[in-house]
Image: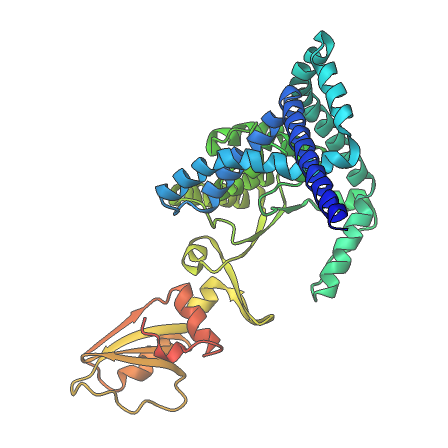
Length: 401
């Protein structure tokens, strides 16, 4: 019995040894095949692409991090080969691999191997172009249904939306969308030029002439894939395309977030030019109230889905006043209860009053108390926002402006 057990153990060890040799041989042949077919070259491109994307997302990472990441890349290739072995084993035997390698060692096989990467690089843009044309044709064909679906979504969210009888009427309305990142086509592989072709086929007012002129403004490489651009560059590309569509209405959400100060001013200048010359209506949602104050003439304040107020910027500023006053004894007198004082602060002998109402009426009523000094100051849009909220989710009475 002991002899039988010993024999089985020996056979088991031999079997394991043979299996290990077979696995090593299989891995060796897979690595050889991947090298001969230039598949490894494609795999090796993945990691530099990942690194480039990471550098955009982690610009603050220290140099040591990137050095260590680069050093670890070599080990990743071996890990990748080991990881794909089970996939190949599902479909190819060791003999299959040897036959494939034998083919790639022939003149025809070598030619095919060298041709594949080049041919793929040339075929991919052709496939993308055909796919883009097909998408444009389908979107134009079903424009009315797409517009109806959009209107339905708007109504569900409580917005009023105009319904058009035909696709032509919907297109004539020239409503434009500025998409975040504007990477609409082909898994994010579209270039700015690709998207220009897409926009031109979809928006009837698209101006190729303006597109070419704006190229000098944004100075982006139109042949680069949009997903490989930085956040700021993607935002520039989105504006480039949207403004080239010659919109009658432009709806923007935090539009200049991610742009440098010079480009922010340039973009606002372009949009204000469209407002003045073409009568474009621009609807902007933004937290940057200081910036909006320079470009907007009508303002609405939203809180928890409710419109707290909505009127022209001039009316807003004319209906609330910041008044700095100094009284002889340094004390603030008892003001009339019907004077709508929103906020009071004191710095030394200077009292600052935020009062809602007609500026002339407010000043005349405070003048009754014979202040030594009284000066009316304009409120910024940010200040108006804080005081008009009246404390909703904000400790506005503790904010000193």
